[in-house]
Structures are given as C-alpha cells and as structure tokens.
Length: 112
Image (cartoon, one colour):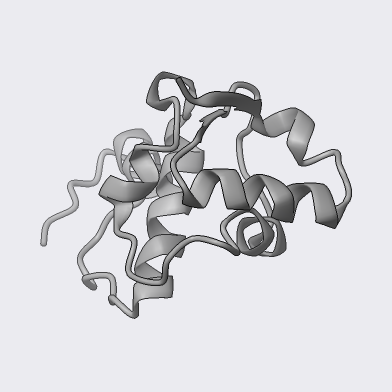
C-alpha cells in the first residue's frame, strides 16, 4: 500500500518537507493526490521530484500519481517538465489546449 500524499497540502509545507516526500515518491511508496492543484512552480517541481532517478519517463511518474486527480493543465505542465528534464524537444507542431480553444472561438482550423 502506498502512502497517500495530498499535493495541495504538501506544497504549503517548507522545502525540507517537500524534499522528504520526494524520497517516498522516488521509491514508489507514495501516491500523490493532486486534487485542487492546477499548476505548480518549476521550483516546486524540482523539490518535489529531487530524489527521482534521472531516467524516469512519464510512465514512472504516473505510477506515483493518482491520475484521476490530475487536471489537464497540471498534466500538460508535468509532461513538459519531464520532457525538458530528459532533454527531449517538443515538436514544433504541438498544439496547446489554449490554442485549440482560441481556434474554436475564431473559427480557424489548425493544421500540422
């Protein structure tokens, strides 16, 4: 059984507490409940995942998240952060949710 950690509460704690939680996450002993978290700062992401092995892909991160509690904005932010951490580049044709919303509003059709 994994230790449930409410990310929203954890982010209110000091840096030492966030880093300590990172140890549990890195050993896949914790499950982050992301309810109420829309975005986090890059500094908070660095602290939260400071103990994570460098080669973790999104699949490994997903094993530590209660995915039903991760909203689409935080999911996108996390994917970008993981890709940047791994040195992957985003394709030039990627479309954000904001761009999709704007295109629907303006009647434009985005193509690759």
